[in-house]
Length: 442
Image 1 (cartoon, rainbow, N blue to C red):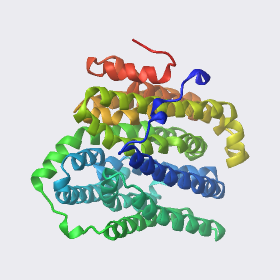
Image 2 (cartoon, rainbow, N blue to C red):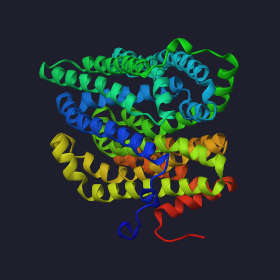
Image 3 (cartoon, rainbow, N blue to C red):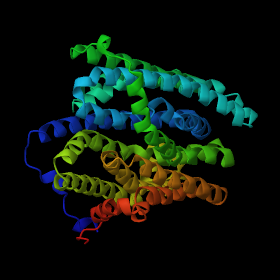
């Protein structure tokens, strides 16, 4: 199938006024993720080997638990704010100022919720002793308010400034992790380094914004705008919760049902599988402003760009999944050694989740441009509920493999099959189908 697929037209575009900026912006985002992928693989695997399966599982369990609340400190604002800045650039200071204070408030609320819910729901005494780990990791949400600056650079198709700022922090903290391993520091030290990275990234983004000649003093708070932004982003916020259930509930349920060792094995497989998720995010964040602009010009241009985007990302995901299916055992063996050998078969299955993840990310600008965020939330919620049910049924018998099957089925339903049910998304479903089938569908 892959051999018959034509190279997406997206790759054949001739130069235009906006294309050069998109390519440059995407290139910087790719450089960012490739750097993180390379350093993250080397140091991340080293950390996994150092901590061992059990502690590595515990650390990933804590990260997954905190991540479930990440929509609270992002508030689903990112895509909505980018779209608003593109169309109302003259009010950018008010938009940025309001977004920052909303995100800061969300970060503070998320810390309180993470710690409170963990204490209320955790019944295992051995895990209650790790509340310090949860508290430290949850504080990262407060520093995410600085992502407002990154949103601005993204809306201007100038992500390179955010990339440089955040990667300086990332590289510094990567070297610190190496030092922690060499000096044989405890698990909690790695949590502090994670928090430090977010703090340093916030400082770096602020410096980059000022160096570009912009002033934070011009940022303004607007209560009416805050209400408008929250109204627009509310479906995305709830959708974010549902997406995080997709991505993280398997780790939490696996930890509750099977223990930290199984979480460690599964985390090794998921780490490799999700390594590629930067691709659709980088591409879509660069292309989205042009898709919003095309919507204003004509439906023909608008849907042409959507088709090109979906076909490109489907092509890439399949190109990754096929070889990874056959060589998953070798990949895990080389990276994590024998202690994580059971992760190989799990990776071979979980890697196909990427096809539907790529599709889901690619369709997000369509739902925003069409004003159908509430539908996106409904689809995602349906898939999230299905994921929980399947995990409950499959994990007791099949452990990590059951969690992988639950994830891929629920992603397929939410990001792809559900679009065939609703009349309003039939056209989108047909475009998605065309992106994975190498012949025309009428």
